[in-house]
Length: 168
Image (cartoon, rainbow, N blue to C red; front, side, top):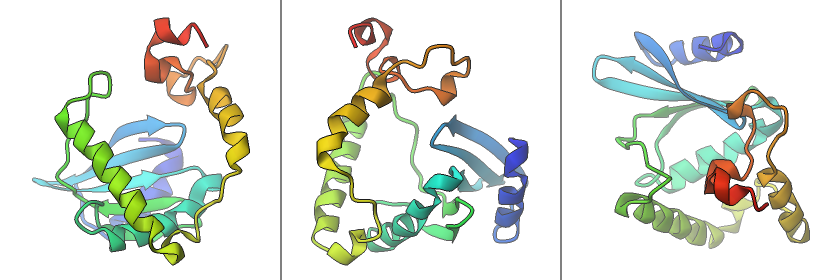
């Protein structure tokens, strides 16, 4: 448990009952806790303050696509906290995609296409400058020299492997 997340966990405890909070993912873009009680679990996602505005649109998308996106139990968009219900999913092996991962990507593409048909649903999302995306992608993939915390750096090697990334 990250000390800075104590308030977020107390927020969750005021809404759902749980016996244990396990940090299951810690990345620069979010930390995720599995809040378990017996066989039941809910999930708390803590995102950086400067990205907190994305949570209201996430909750709207979850309401619109109930079958595909875990139910949002509660959200504190100003603090960057999202509490969601167990979704029955499993971890994916991103290094060697299996049929389930391919189906996940297809479903995600369908969600995007369906959401695009409802402009009000997407109106709260940031509108990127398309012409800036190639440069931003290259910056995102650039290895972070001197960064000792692998979870805080991305670098192309995170996605394509260290050998292939050496060409970037």
